[in-house]
Image 1 (cartoon, one colour):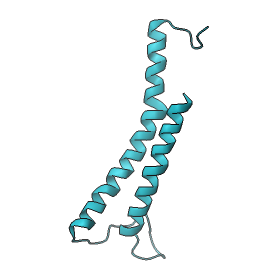
Image 2 (cartoon, one colour):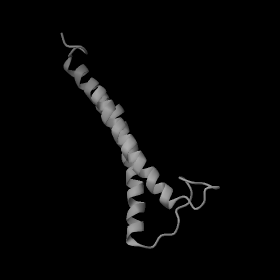
Image 3 (cartoon, rainbow, N blue to C red):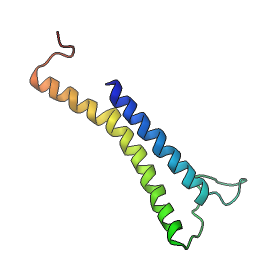
Length: 91
């Protein structure tokens, strides 16, 4: 199960860093107010719109990727082991 933890941590760190970078660019009007969670600044170019879409995609990829590798995959493996009647530690 250590490999699932490492994969989930890698996804969380990488996608979280990408989200923080894009949120810092588009959601920080000043350093005295709300920064990463502030209102999105008005943007008009295609690259700005792409950055906003990627910002949301990275956020959800970080959350859902970590949950998948830390909760769903280990739970599925334990459920299949219990269903098959296999011991937790093979002899």
